[in-house]
Length: 315
Image (cartoon, rainbow, N blue to C red; front, side, top):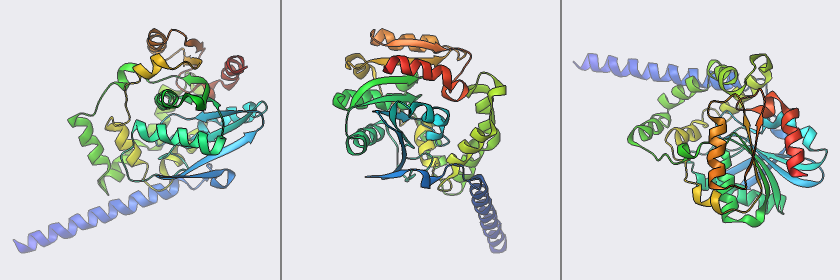
C-alpha cells in the first residue's frame, strides 16, 4: 500500500513538473518575435502596477483604449495611431493586466479601471481629453466620465458591450471558472489553451473581422504575444472576466452624463444595431453610425472608414 502511494506521488509530481515546464516553454515561444516593444513607450507608475503607454503627435489630446482581454493591447490601434497623430496628441495605453503593462495577481473590477483611466488623464495627460474606446472597456469610460466629467470631452465607442451583458453578476459557475484559472499549474494550462494561436486565429476570422482576406498574421502574433508577456499572469484578468467581476450596471451613468457620445458598430455583427439602439433609448443624444463590411475591430479591418467618422465627430 505504501509502495503504491509512493508511486502515485512520484507520478503526480512528474506530471505537474512536465506540465509546468511545457507552460514555461509555450510562454517563452509566444514572445520571441518581440512585436510589442516596451522601449517604444513610457511607463505610468500606478498604485497596482506600472502601465505602458505611447504618446505621439501634437494637438488636442486623444486617448485610445483597447478592448479588455488579456490578448488585447494598444496594438489594436496600430493602423490608426500614425494617421490620428497628424491632428492630435495621441495617447494609447495597455490597460493593467494587458500587453506590456503589469499583470498583478488580483481581482480586476470595473472600479479598478475607472480609477486607472481617471488617474492617467489627471497625472499624465493633464487636461480634458477626447476618448476612443472598444468593447467592454467603454463601460469604464462611461463610469469614469460620470464620476469626474471634467476629465472628458467627446467619447467615441466602437462596438460597446450590451447593456444586458453588463448587468450580469457573478454566479457559482462563474466563480468556479475564476478559481480554476487562478490555480498555479492547472490554471496556466487552461490559460494556454484559451489563448492559443488556434483560438486567436478563430476569433479573428470569425468574430473580429468580416472579410477573412483582411486577416494579417502580424495581428495574430501581436495578440498571442500580448497574452503571454509576463508568462501566464494574464490569466488573472481572464479569470476576473470569466468570473463576471468586471461587469457593472451603467444605465444611471449613461443616462445622466452630458458628454457627446458617438457609437460606431460593425454592421456584420449580429444584433449590433439593436445593441446601439439600446444605448440611445437610455440617452437619446447619442449618435450612431455603422462601419460597413466590418465586424468587431473595424479599426483594424477598415481604419480609413473609422478615421473619417472620427475626424467628423471630433472636429
